[in-house]
Length: 280
View 1 (tube, rainbow, N blue to C red):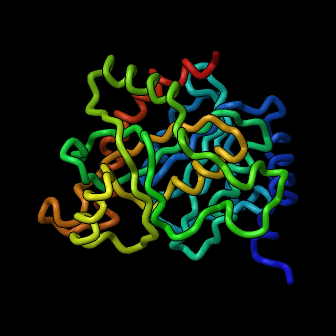
View 2: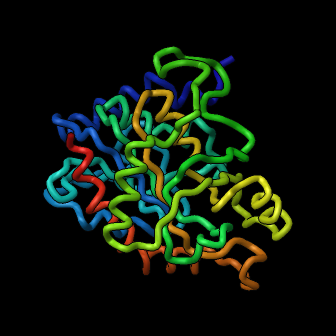
């Protein structure tokens, strides 16, 4: 009996990658995924070709506010990049295969280095709204993995080592850039939860004891799938709010988006200083 994964499997990803390379035959080797409220960063691209997700074969389309659903192919400064403005989430009812489909298609098209961005709630004392967190590691608490289910060897190994999901060299480059720009930026552990509800104060206290510095509802599946395909991964969270129970304020998605848009320029400045190092 066919399973849902087959509708967003290797064959479909090859078709999507073939379409993408038709838009830009010399396909970028660097991909960027923009998280909630961060689609404004796509405006920094020059010589840009924009392709709405529905035009790309088999691409899932985001249904959450703050995720535009466009692929941008252009230059960030002088670096060719493929930018995914928006992602789909498990909490929308998408499967793991669908959540990571766009990243896998980028990998088949030629992307070797992947920069993942997201909005997150701050847990650590240093994770204040407006700060940036470079992922040093993660806690996958979403209850599933993109590698689960029938194994297609064309993606890579079945059992993927995640000792260094987030590339140490890329992390050093990003932190050095943040220090030179005097940005509020730290390295930390990201906890991925299913959503869409925000965490309870008790859950946040538990995450704190587990060693999480920030919490969100995305990013980790993409990082795992990218590592299976031997991509180098850098992930950066924009801290948009303090996690539940730490500030005394109720959490609202529209306020998270607004906070992200207001402070997205710090992330843009960090990428301005970090991305040129990816050309070597």
